[in-house]
Length: 388
Image 1 (spheres, rainbow, N blue to C red):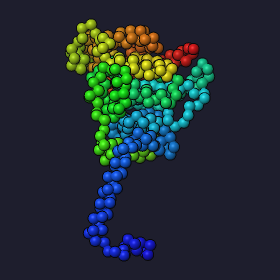
Image 2 (image 1 turned 90 degrees about the horizontal axis):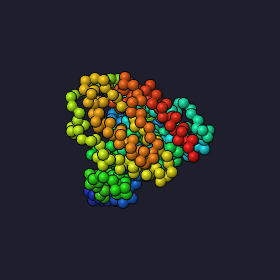
Image 3 (image 1 turned 30 degrees about the vertical axis):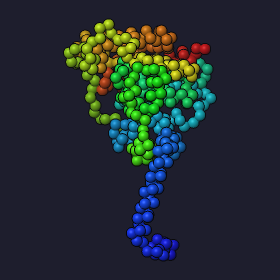
Image 4 (image 1 turned 60 degrees about the vertical axis):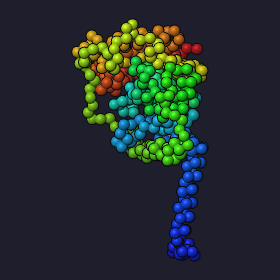
Protein backbone atom coordinates (compact mmCIF):
# COMPACT_ATOMS: atom_id res chain seq x y z
CA UNK A 1 0.00 0.00 0.00
CA UNK A 2 1.38 3.36 -1.07
CA UNK A 3 0.09 4.98 2.09
CA UNK A 4 2.60 2.97 4.14
CA UNK A 5 5.61 3.52 1.92
CA UNK A 6 7.08 5.94 4.50
CA UNK A 7 7.36 2.96 6.85
CA UNK A 8 8.10 0.05 4.54
CA UNK A 9 10.18 1.90 1.94
CA UNK A 10 11.94 4.76 3.75
CA UNK A 11 14.11 7.15 1.76
CA UNK A 12 16.96 6.43 4.14
CA UNK A 13 17.32 2.74 5.01
CA UNK A 14 17.01 1.78 8.65
CA UNK A 15 20.33 1.27 10.37
CA UNK A 16 21.71 0.91 13.85
CA UNK A 17 21.96 4.64 14.33
CA UNK A 18 18.30 5.10 13.42
CA UNK A 19 17.22 2.33 15.82
CA UNK A 20 19.42 3.80 18.55
CA UNK A 21 17.86 7.24 18.11
CA UNK A 22 14.34 5.80 18.22
CA UNK A 23 15.13 3.90 21.43
CA UNK A 24 16.74 6.95 23.06
CA UNK A 25 13.82 9.19 22.14
CA UNK A 26 11.36 6.59 23.42
CA UNK A 27 13.20 6.27 26.74
CA UNK A 28 13.43 10.06 27.13
CA UNK A 29 9.73 10.42 26.35
CA UNK A 30 8.89 7.72 28.89
CA UNK A 31 11.03 9.41 31.55
CA UNK A 32 9.48 12.80 30.79
CA UNK A 33 5.98 11.35 31.01
CA UNK A 34 6.75 9.75 34.38
CA UNK A 35 8.29 12.98 35.69
CA UNK A 36 5.29 14.99 34.57
CA UNK A 37 2.97 12.47 36.21
CA UNK A 38 4.99 12.45 39.44
CA UNK A 39 5.08 16.25 39.69
CA UNK A 40 1.38 16.75 39.00
CA UNK A 41 0.31 13.76 41.16
CA UNK A 42 -2.97 13.11 39.31
CA UNK A 43 -3.91 9.92 41.20
CA UNK A 44 -6.62 11.61 43.34
CA UNK A 45 -8.18 13.03 40.16
CA UNK A 46 -7.84 9.75 38.26
CA UNK A 47 -9.46 7.94 41.19
CA UNK A 48 -12.59 10.02 40.59
CA UNK A 49 -12.64 9.20 36.86
CA UNK A 50 -15.09 6.34 36.57
CA UNK A 51 -17.63 4.62 34.34
CA UNK A 52 -19.94 4.23 37.32
CA UNK A 53 -22.97 6.52 37.50
CA UNK A 54 -22.66 7.15 33.74
CA UNK A 55 -22.00 4.15 31.50
CA UNK A 56 -22.54 1.83 34.48
CA UNK A 57 -24.98 2.32 37.36
CA UNK A 58 -23.58 3.26 40.75
CA UNK A 59 -22.97 0.55 43.31
CA UNK A 60 -24.91 0.38 46.58
CA UNK A 61 -21.90 -0.07 48.86
CA UNK A 62 -18.24 0.85 48.96
CA UNK A 63 -16.01 -1.44 46.87
CA UNK A 64 -14.52 -4.29 48.88
CA UNK A 65 -13.47 -7.78 47.89
CA UNK A 66 -11.29 -10.62 49.07
CA UNK A 67 -11.67 -12.49 45.75
CA UNK A 68 -12.11 -10.02 42.88
CA UNK A 69 -12.45 -12.61 40.12
CA UNK A 70 -15.58 -14.17 41.65
CA UNK A 71 -16.92 -11.04 43.36
CA UNK A 72 -16.75 -8.79 40.26
CA UNK A 73 -15.42 -6.20 42.65
CA UNK A 74 -12.11 -5.02 44.03
CA UNK A 75 -10.95 -3.22 47.15
CA UNK A 76 -10.34 0.33 45.98
CA UNK A 77 -8.88 1.98 49.05
CA UNK A 78 -8.16 5.55 48.05
CA UNK A 79 -11.11 7.47 49.41
CA UNK A 80 -11.76 9.35 46.17
CA UNK A 81 -12.05 6.10 44.23
CA UNK A 82 -14.19 4.42 46.87
CA UNK A 83 -16.82 7.12 46.66
CA UNK A 84 -16.68 7.57 42.87
CA UNK A 85 -18.27 4.18 42.23
CA UNK A 86 -21.31 4.39 44.53
CA UNK A 87 -24.74 5.90 43.90
CA UNK A 88 -24.14 8.66 46.42
CA UNK A 89 -21.83 10.49 44.01
CA UNK A 90 -24.10 10.32 40.96
CA UNK A 91 -26.26 13.42 41.29
CA UNK A 92 -27.19 16.40 43.38
CA UNK A 93 -29.33 15.83 46.41
CA UNK A 94 -33.06 15.96 45.66
CA UNK A 95 -35.14 18.61 47.42
CA UNK A 96 -37.42 15.95 48.95
CA UNK A 97 -34.57 13.75 50.21
CA UNK A 98 -33.58 13.39 53.87
CA UNK A 99 -30.10 11.95 53.44
CA UNK A 100 -28.66 9.60 56.09
CA UNK A 101 -25.22 7.96 56.07
CA UNK A 102 -24.56 4.69 57.91
CA UNK A 103 -20.97 4.38 59.16
CA UNK A 104 -19.46 1.26 60.62
CA UNK A 105 -17.81 -2.08 60.00
CA UNK A 106 -18.55 -5.23 58.00
CA UNK A 107 -21.88 -5.71 59.77
CA UNK A 108 -23.01 -2.38 58.28
CA UNK A 109 -21.38 -3.05 54.90
CA UNK A 110 -23.20 -6.39 54.84
CA UNK A 111 -20.87 -9.36 55.23
CA UNK A 112 -22.60 -12.56 54.01
CA UNK A 113 -25.48 -10.34 52.87
CA UNK A 114 -26.55 -9.37 49.37
CA UNK A 115 -26.74 -5.70 48.42
CA UNK A 116 -30.49 -5.63 49.09
CA UNK A 117 -30.19 -7.26 52.53
CA UNK A 118 -28.09 -4.65 54.35
CA UNK A 119 -29.25 -2.29 57.09
CA UNK A 120 -29.55 0.60 54.64
CA UNK A 121 -31.41 -1.48 52.05
CA UNK A 122 -33.93 -2.66 54.65
CA UNK A 123 -34.78 0.92 55.59
CA UNK A 124 -34.91 2.17 52.00
CA UNK A 125 -37.43 -0.55 51.14
CA UNK A 126 -39.70 0.84 53.84
CA UNK A 127 -40.28 4.06 51.87
CA UNK A 128 -40.31 6.09 55.08
CA UNK A 129 -41.30 9.74 55.17
CA UNK A 130 -39.81 12.18 57.63
CA UNK A 131 -42.02 14.43 59.81
CA UNK A 132 -41.58 17.23 57.23
CA UNK A 133 -42.59 14.96 54.34
CA UNK A 134 -39.14 14.30 52.89
CA UNK A 135 -38.13 10.79 51.83
CA UNK A 136 -35.76 8.96 54.16
CA UNK A 137 -32.86 7.76 52.00
CA UNK A 138 -30.00 5.85 53.64
CA UNK A 139 -26.57 5.34 52.07
CA UNK A 140 -24.33 2.48 53.14
CA UNK A 141 -20.86 3.82 54.02
CA UNK A 142 -19.91 0.84 56.16
CA UNK A 143 -16.59 -0.81 55.37
CA UNK A 144 -14.78 -3.86 56.81
CA UNK A 145 -13.24 -4.00 59.42
CA UNK A 146 -13.95 -2.41 62.80
CA UNK A 147 -11.87 0.75 63.13
CA UNK A 148 -12.98 4.20 64.30
CA UNK A 149 -10.15 6.03 62.51
CA UNK A 150 -11.24 4.49 59.21
CA UNK A 151 -14.82 5.54 60.00
CA UNK A 152 -13.72 9.09 60.78
CA UNK A 153 -11.82 9.36 57.51
CA UNK A 154 -14.83 8.08 55.55
CA UNK A 155 -17.04 10.58 57.38
CA UNK A 156 -14.67 13.41 56.51
CA UNK A 157 -14.76 12.47 52.81
CA UNK A 158 -18.55 12.04 52.87
CA UNK A 159 -19.34 15.56 54.09
CA UNK A 160 -19.25 16.94 50.54
CA UNK A 161 -22.36 14.87 49.73
CA UNK A 162 -24.71 16.90 51.96
CA UNK A 163 -25.85 14.46 54.64
CA UNK A 164 -28.69 15.43 56.98
CA UNK A 165 -27.73 12.87 59.62
CA UNK A 166 -25.11 10.21 60.29
CA UNK A 167 -25.71 6.93 62.12
CA UNK A 168 -22.43 5.60 63.49
CA UNK A 169 -22.41 1.92 64.51
CA UNK A 170 -19.72 0.98 67.01
CA UNK A 171 -18.30 -1.99 68.85
CA UNK A 172 -15.41 -2.41 71.27
CA UNK A 173 -13.03 -3.91 68.68
CA UNK A 174 -13.11 -0.68 66.71
CA UNK A 175 -11.43 1.22 69.56
CA UNK A 176 -8.22 -0.78 70.03
CA UNK A 177 -5.39 1.76 69.85
CA UNK A 178 -2.85 -0.64 68.37
CA UNK A 179 -5.15 -1.43 65.42
CA UNK A 180 -6.06 2.10 64.32
CA UNK A 181 -3.18 2.61 61.88
CA UNK A 182 -3.20 -0.94 60.48
CA UNK A 183 -6.34 -0.60 58.39
CA UNK A 184 -5.69 -0.53 54.64
CA UNK A 185 -7.88 2.53 54.11
CA UNK A 186 -5.76 4.36 56.68
CA UNK A 187 -2.50 3.10 55.18
CA UNK A 188 -3.54 4.04 51.63
CA UNK A 189 -4.68 7.52 52.68
CA UNK A 190 -1.82 8.20 55.05
CA UNK A 191 -1.73 11.91 54.23
CA UNK A 192 -5.30 12.32 55.48
CA UNK A 193 -4.69 10.18 58.54
CA UNK A 194 -1.64 12.26 59.38
CA UNK A 195 -3.65 15.47 59.08
CA UNK A 196 -6.26 14.17 61.54
CA UNK A 197 -3.61 13.01 64.00
CA UNK A 198 -1.87 16.38 63.95
CA UNK A 199 -5.02 18.51 63.98
CA UNK A 200 -6.65 16.69 66.90
CA UNK A 201 -3.46 15.61 68.70
CA UNK A 202 -4.59 11.99 68.60
CA UNK A 203 -2.79 9.43 70.71
CA UNK A 204 -1.52 7.52 67.67
CA UNK A 205 2.06 7.05 66.52
CA UNK A 206 2.07 8.56 63.04
CA UNK A 207 5.54 7.14 62.41
CA UNK A 208 3.71 3.85 61.77
CA UNK A 209 2.10 5.40 58.71
CA UNK A 210 3.84 5.15 55.33
CA UNK A 211 6.15 8.05 54.56
CA UNK A 212 5.03 10.58 51.99
CA UNK A 213 5.79 9.04 48.57
CA UNK A 214 8.99 10.18 46.90
CA UNK A 215 9.26 11.16 43.25
CA UNK A 216 9.72 7.56 42.10
CA UNK A 217 6.77 6.32 44.14
CA UNK A 218 4.58 9.06 42.62
CA UNK A 219 5.51 8.05 39.07
CA UNK A 220 3.42 5.87 36.76
CA UNK A 221 5.72 2.95 37.52
CA UNK A 222 5.51 3.55 41.26
CA UNK A 223 1.71 3.77 41.18
CA UNK A 224 1.12 1.09 38.56
CA UNK A 225 -0.74 -1.16 41.00
CA UNK A 226 -3.17 1.58 42.07
CA UNK A 227 -3.75 2.53 38.43
CA UNK A 228 -4.31 -1.11 37.47
CA UNK A 229 -6.79 -1.54 40.33
CA UNK A 230 -8.76 1.50 39.18
CA UNK A 231 -8.93 0.07 35.67
CA UNK A 232 -9.89 -3.39 36.92
CA UNK A 233 -12.66 -1.85 39.01
CA UNK A 234 -14.19 -0.41 35.85
CA UNK A 235 -13.87 -3.73 33.99
CA UNK A 236 -15.43 -5.68 36.86
CA UNK A 237 -18.35 -3.28 36.71
CA UNK A 238 -19.48 -4.83 33.43
CA UNK A 239 -19.57 -8.33 34.96
CA UNK A 240 -21.28 -6.94 38.07
CA UNK A 241 -23.95 -5.32 35.91
CA UNK A 242 -24.55 -8.62 34.08
CA UNK A 243 -24.69 -10.83 37.19
CA UNK A 244 -25.77 -8.53 40.02
CA UNK A 245 -22.96 -9.89 42.23
CA UNK A 246 -20.87 -7.29 44.02
CA UNK A 247 -19.66 -9.83 46.56
CA UNK A 248 -19.97 -13.59 46.11
CA UNK A 249 -21.02 -15.08 49.43
CA UNK A 250 -19.61 -18.56 50.08
CA UNK A 251 -21.97 -21.53 49.98
CA UNK A 252 -20.48 -22.71 53.25
CA UNK A 253 -18.94 -20.65 56.02
CA UNK A 254 -17.78 -21.18 59.57
CA UNK A 255 -20.44 -20.82 62.21
CA UNK A 256 -20.14 -18.54 65.21
CA UNK A 257 -18.26 -20.09 68.12
CA UNK A 258 -20.58 -21.13 70.95
CA UNK A 259 -18.27 -23.13 73.22
CA UNK A 260 -15.37 -20.94 74.22
CA UNK A 261 -11.90 -21.70 75.50
CA UNK A 262 -11.24 -21.18 79.21
CA UNK A 263 -10.07 -17.79 80.40
CA UNK A 264 -11.12 -14.17 80.20
CA UNK A 265 -8.22 -12.64 78.27
CA UNK A 266 -8.70 -10.16 75.43
CA UNK A 267 -6.55 -11.09 72.43
CA UNK A 268 -3.99 -12.48 74.82
CA UNK A 269 -4.10 -9.40 77.05
CA UNK A 270 -4.85 -10.13 80.70
CA UNK A 271 -7.77 -8.61 82.55
CA UNK A 272 -7.50 -4.88 83.28
CA UNK A 273 -8.37 -4.32 86.89
CA UNK A 274 -11.11 -1.74 87.12
CA UNK A 275 -11.88 -2.05 83.40
CA UNK A 276 -11.24 0.36 80.55
CA UNK A 277 -10.47 4.02 80.98
CA UNK A 278 -10.80 6.59 78.22
CA UNK A 279 -7.06 6.77 77.56
CA UNK A 280 -6.81 3.01 76.95
CA UNK A 281 -9.11 3.08 73.93
CA UNK A 282 -9.25 5.37 70.88
CA UNK A 283 -12.10 7.51 72.10
CA UNK A 284 -10.04 10.55 71.13
CA UNK A 285 -10.43 9.43 67.51
CA UNK A 286 -14.17 9.18 67.87
CA UNK A 287 -14.31 12.58 69.56
CA UNK A 288 -12.44 13.97 66.54
CA UNK A 289 -15.05 12.45 64.23
CA UNK A 290 -17.86 13.93 66.28
CA UNK A 291 -16.13 17.32 66.20
CA UNK A 292 -15.87 17.13 62.40
CA UNK A 293 -19.62 16.48 62.22
CA UNK A 294 -20.42 19.23 64.72
CA UNK A 295 -18.38 21.76 62.74
CA UNK A 296 -20.70 21.05 59.80
CA UNK A 297 -23.87 21.21 61.93
CA UNK A 298 -24.37 17.51 61.22
CA UNK A 299 -26.25 15.48 63.86
CA UNK A 300 -24.89 12.02 64.65
CA UNK A 301 -26.75 9.06 66.14
CA UNK A 302 -24.28 6.78 67.93
CA UNK A 303 -25.29 3.12 68.18
CA UNK A 304 -23.55 0.32 70.03
CA UNK A 305 -24.20 -2.56 67.65
CA UNK A 306 -25.52 -6.02 68.63
CA UNK A 307 -23.19 -8.84 69.66
CA UNK A 308 -23.59 -12.59 70.10
CA UNK A 309 -23.93 -13.71 73.74
CA UNK A 310 -23.06 -17.36 74.11
CA UNK A 311 -24.80 -19.81 76.43
CA UNK A 312 -22.12 -22.42 75.80
CA UNK A 313 -18.96 -23.37 77.66
CA UNK A 314 -17.26 -20.53 79.57
CA UNK A 315 -20.27 -18.22 79.18
CA UNK A 316 -19.74 -17.09 82.76
CA UNK A 317 -16.53 -15.33 81.66
CA UNK A 318 -17.11 -14.44 78.01
CA UNK A 319 -19.87 -13.17 75.74
CA UNK A 320 -18.18 -14.58 72.64
CA UNK A 321 -14.76 -15.33 71.20
CA UNK A 322 -14.17 -11.59 70.71
CA UNK A 323 -15.13 -10.25 74.11
CA UNK A 324 -14.64 -11.32 77.71
CA UNK A 325 -17.40 -9.95 79.90
CA UNK A 326 -15.14 -7.67 81.94
CA UNK A 327 -13.87 -5.95 78.77
CA UNK A 328 -17.22 -5.54 77.05
CA UNK A 329 -19.17 -4.48 80.13
CA UNK A 330 -16.64 -1.81 81.06
CA UNK A 331 -16.60 -0.61 77.44
CA UNK A 332 -20.38 -0.25 77.43
CA UNK A 333 -20.28 1.68 80.68
CA UNK A 334 -17.49 3.94 79.43
CA UNK A 335 -19.24 4.58 76.11
CA UNK A 336 -22.50 5.47 77.86
CA UNK A 337 -20.70 7.82 80.26
CA UNK A 338 -18.85 9.61 77.45
CA UNK A 339 -22.06 9.89 75.43
CA UNK A 340 -23.80 11.49 78.41
CA UNK A 341 -20.89 13.83 79.08
CA UNK A 342 -20.71 14.94 75.44
CA UNK A 343 -24.52 15.12 75.04
CA UNK A 344 -24.49 12.63 72.17
CA UNK A 345 -27.60 11.02 70.74
CA UNK A 346 -26.85 7.45 71.80
CA UNK A 347 -28.64 4.13 71.94
CA UNK A 348 -27.27 0.77 73.04
CA UNK A 349 -28.50 -2.14 70.90
CA UNK A 350 -25.93 -4.63 72.18
CA UNK A 351 -28.56 -7.31 72.89
CA UNK A 352 -31.07 -6.33 70.18
CA UNK A 353 -30.59 -9.48 68.07
CA UNK A 354 -31.45 -13.07 69.10
CA UNK A 355 -28.43 -15.33 69.51
CA UNK A 356 -29.58 -17.75 66.82
CA UNK A 357 -29.50 -14.95 64.23
CA UNK A 358 -25.72 -14.47 64.23
CA UNK A 359 -23.86 -16.09 61.35
CA UNK A 360 -20.10 -16.58 61.13
CA UNK A 361 -19.01 -14.20 63.91
CA UNK A 362 -20.39 -12.53 66.98
CA UNK A 363 -21.12 -9.37 64.95
CA UNK A 364 -22.64 -10.53 61.64
CA UNK A 365 -26.39 -11.13 61.36
CA UNK A 366 -28.79 -12.99 59.09
CA UNK A 367 -30.83 -10.95 56.60
CA UNK A 368 -33.95 -11.19 58.78
CA UNK A 369 -32.16 -10.03 61.93
CA UNK A 370 -30.42 -7.25 60.02
CA UNK A 371 -33.79 -5.83 59.01
CA UNK A 372 -35.08 -6.17 62.57
CA UNK A 373 -32.16 -4.09 63.82
CA UNK A 374 -32.76 -1.58 61.02
CA UNK A 375 -36.38 -1.24 62.10
CA UNK A 376 -35.20 -0.45 65.63
CA UNK A 377 -33.01 2.37 64.31
CA UNK A 378 -35.74 4.14 62.32
CA UNK A 379 -37.63 5.62 65.32
CA UNK A 380 -34.38 7.16 66.59
CA UNK A 381 -33.77 8.77 63.20
CA UNK A 382 -37.31 10.13 63.15
CA UNK A 383 -37.00 11.49 66.67
CA UNK A 384 -33.75 13.29 65.88
CA UNK A 385 -35.17 14.76 62.68
CA UNK A 386 -38.17 16.12 64.58
CA UNK A 387 -35.95 18.06 66.98
CA UNK A 388 -35.48 21.77 66.21
